[in-house]
Length: 276
Image (cartoon, rainbow, N blue to C red; front, side, top):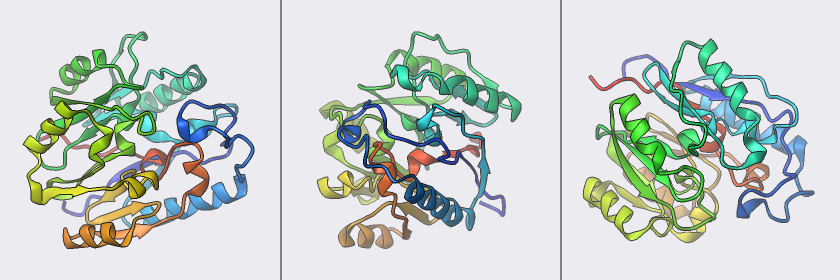
């Protein structure tokens, strides 16, 4: 790793609310959000990550409550980025802000066809050992995006299909970790996708997440070197992660869970160096 720190993009929850329902977690939460608690939780996550990586903050925009979830700004590889095209109408207003941020920060943007749904690093994750991108489809990202991603990044795309609407982006149930480990919740994926995962990740590198941990968004974790930041994990899951050489830091993110997001959703890793 050398001494170059990862750069991670975050956006403060200045305008965060849950006032529409675009995933099952949001249903019934419209009035229960405590914005002061949300701001406190967000600052705690930012400060915890800042001990190990450089957090870059972008400005929030009014009337775009989900902009706080920067994982959906786009996908990044080297100096290239693919900005998201949101399927839910409610999030489309975010696109112009994210595109502007990428351009102003020196990224070369792919002009992805507006008709193709693609929700960024929520559905496009680099394996931490193999030279490929795990790329999801089924709910928010469409498989038509996959070839474009592969061609633009010049990196193999492994397509994996989500089948449980509670896990609507792969980063809610699938987390590649340092040194080729993978923390994931197999029932979120169809049979062929589970075979694709198992054929690439050897058994000793698979960290299986059960239903309760998955429901607490344990897979929606931020991994920096040997640190894993997440909302909550059971004792057996923490033990399994520690056995694999990771240190687990729990940061309560109750208010963001009401919108169907957690630690990983609130971040976008900007340093994805090209394979040498």
